[in-house]
Length: 246
Image (tube, rainbow, N blue to C red; front, side):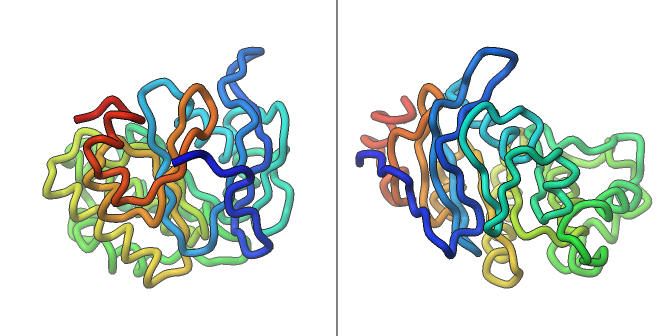
């Protein structure tokens, strides 16, 4: 399926990205990339390793400088905002590798999420425990002693504390047992259905993508080359064509 220009640019879009380029130093990794995400949508970003998926996530949250183009969130241009200011606007980032503090307890890690999320929104720990009851049970446990799946739940729970509107998830299934991956996928789906949340997920696990995503964008060489449905991305021939998988 061919890439569509200015994908889903609309007044209703929660996030609109138009013609952005970014990278490291003077090296451009993203090249004139455009797309939009509507409220309560789960958008999956897929592609081979090294095509710019994590670079895109870091650019959206502000960890990498925007060289060209615009990023709008709820109609406001945020492309020059610092990461902290974007977080206060309601964008949360769960990085690849989870980024939790191993020597701190589960509860201490969650407390750090109070500074994230939307302006004027109070920290909501009960909301986290509704979706991740295990975190309440393990409150005093050191985060580093938890399993990979539990640590991923903690990483997602920590950003949920601040009640964000958009969550960026980078490789949430990495290093996690298949049954826990399924559980996390179900929770991601519930978050968009039951809460005021939108999700962009970078992921290599095609089973997870098929179970949670509303639609998929394929990246290659820093740009979008295709827009696919979850059923298309699960097709063996499509996976071979775009991802060299299966």
